Image (tube, rainbow, N blue to C red; front, side, top):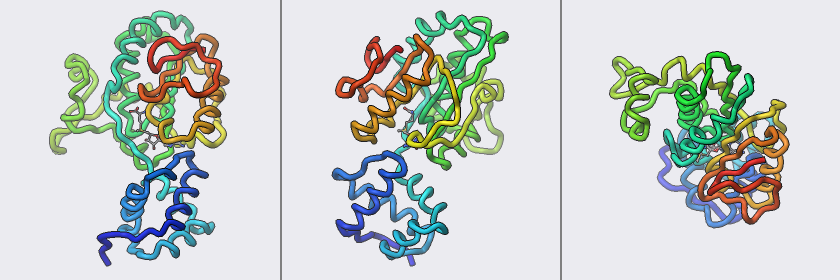
Length: 270
Ligand SMILES: C[S@@+](CC[C@H](N)C(=O)[O-])C[C@H]1O[C@@H](n2cnc3c(N)ncnc32)[C@H](O)[C@@H]1O
């Protein structure tokens, strides 16, 4: 059966948005019915299901755990791009990198989506970090979405998504894929700096840090104020003193209580 639309009662919408909120912190409760309906339909088409109640019963069972993960995954918004919010990369190159004198360098891209953000960081480090060969350097890149992590792992991108990558980097850090349309793979020397892993920011974090820099951009807008506040304070704990936190440009921290020093828009320092 091919579903063309899905009826979702208020009660069903609240059950779904509640589940998503409890598992991921993503807050769909206010005015996101159309989004929830459209994204649930994607799962229903794959599963050949048409009963919301039966689906909800299933995802609440142990056998439905994997489906719950997939449901959360389709509810995520994954828009990203290379060198998005370029001011952060400029600041990284001009101010942050010249100050990083230690051998051990740790960055965290905390909601990395399909990889454009951590690979942009890696290229910037390769270009602007002095003595890079002698550094013990790693960019941890995590996301809740397994679909996006698979894309990040492949690191293959259509040409039109590379428009903000500096031309000289295109030549150095991308390899044209044979027989795959006009697509390019990030070079192994850049990929090797990035370690991808599944991580739900709401759960406990297995890594100890400390990190020199954290990018957590364009994900906190999906969280409510309490969740944002808890997250920002956890970032504080895992950053080294003097470490930097970059958030999305629409995600200023002005309405939440935290200990970071404001540096410039969407840029904070411990
Ligand atoms: C809009 S993308 C932002 C990507 C990138 N940081 C950027 O600014 O271009 C938001 C990402 O946050 C991820 N996300 C949402 N909730 C999450 C959670 N609880 N834990 C980890 N990642 C989450 C989504 O899967 C999605 O890939």
